[in-house]
Image (cartoon, rainbow, N blue to C red; front, side, top):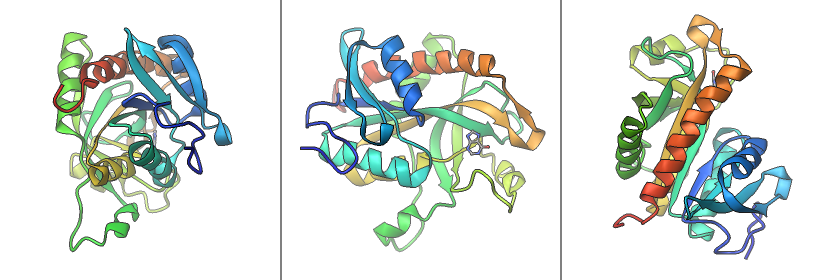
Length: 241
Ligand code: HPA
C-alpha cells in the first residue's frame, strides 16, 4: 500500500524514523551511518531509506521544508506505515541570548505562527510538545556522549524571509531557536498517539547576524547524528520497551 507521497509498503519503514529536511542529507545519513540500507522512497526526490544501526532497524526519510511538507510525510508515516517515533534532525536559527552557533538544541515544545492546528477545531490554543520519553532519553544520551545540549522552546515559523522581524519578542520569551517543521510534527504525533522529538543544530544567529561555515555545520551535524541515532535505538523497544 503506497500513499500519495510515499511509495513503500507497510513494513518498509522501521518503527523509528529520523527526518532531516534535505533529501540529500537523508541519502548521506543512510550511506554513512546505516548498514544494509535500502531506498524505500524516491517520489518527488524525497528520499527515504531503511537499514540498521548497531543491528537495530532505523529509517531515515526526508521531510522537505515547512509545516505543510513535514505535515504530509509525518502524517503518512504515523498513520499508514505504522511508524511509532519520529526524530527530526535539522538546523535552527539561534534566538535566545544564551544560544550560540553550533549548539545542539532539543525542542521541548514548539511555539508557532502556523495555522496547522486550525484543522483540529480546538476551543483554545494547543501547545505542541515533544514526547517526554524521547526528550528524556536524548538528554540522558547527550550526557553520556558528552554532547552539551540546551532544552527548551522552539519557534516553528511559516516564514524564512519574514518582514515582520519578530525575533526579539520571541527571545524575550526565552525561545531557543527558530525552525520550520517542529509544530506540524508534534501535532501529528499527538493526534496519532505517537512520539516525536526535534533535535537541531544552530546554523545561524539571525539577531547577531552570525552564521556557520559549511565545515562547522558538518562537525555539529556529526554530533547531532550520533545523538539522534543512539536515541533512536535506545527508544526502539517501544513505549513500554
Ligand atoms: N529561520 C527559519 N529556519 C531556520 C533558520 C532561520 O533563521 N535557520 C535555520 N533554520
